[in-house]
Length: 70
Image (cartoon, rainbow, N blue to C red; front, side):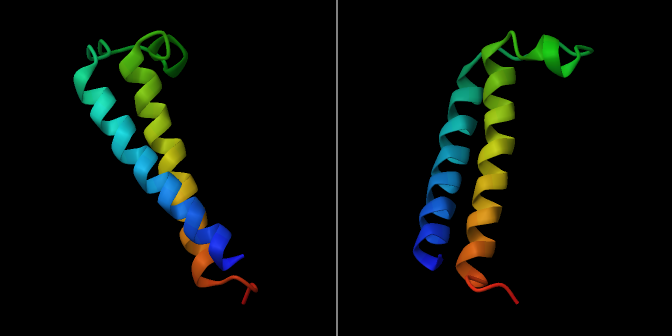
């Protein structure tokens, strides 16, 4: 589990960085839109991607630090 956790952490961290770079290059999402409407824009999809990658990195970190549970 420790190796899988480290791999998941690295994928999440790298994915977060890539999504951040792509979001910065994309046209910004207009203010006042719902999440569903924001997904029509590339920047909105990359922002959601950043959240998903941050969760993956967090889960990977937990698995790497506590591979057998408590």
